[in-house]
Amino acid sequence: MNLQPTPFGSLQSARPAVAAAAASGEVEGLLLAASARVEAAQTQDGVTVDLLVHLAWHVINIEAWPLCGHQQTALLVAAAQRQMRTLLADTGLAALLIEQGAIEAQLQQGLQRSTADWGLSVDLVVLRQVDIPVGRQIEADVDHLCALRQCRDRRRAAFC
Image (tube, rainbow, N blue to C red; front, side, top):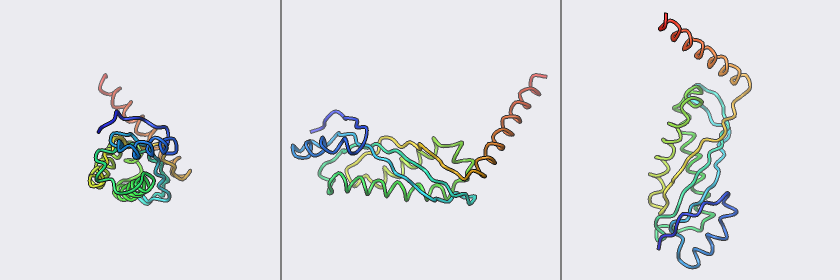
């Protein structure tokens, strides 16, 4: 039996509803959320970053859901951490800061593939926080300003 997805602010607030739904056999359709912290990950250009990724998913097949919600969440968070590290190894800092939507989509697709056998559907992946070293942040800000100036100069040249 499918339920209407029920959003939860945190996994902690979801536990009573998941337990009640599991007891009644109606876990399918519940929308769950958790955060995955990825610390000291290396980008392609050797910058160490810390990330916070928010995940939202729902149960699509209770028979394929062999673990309790907490264990399932821990596995999903670990999978997100591994995949994010792999994505970062192929991504430079500039691309990480500029193309977050594409990185989120790649992470969501990877998680969809790896969790399909678990009876879960990953609905949303949001890269919430990217912490980079202060020196690299200054460099990134300067590069961003230079890119904005070049864009402005090209527009001015096009109108003249």
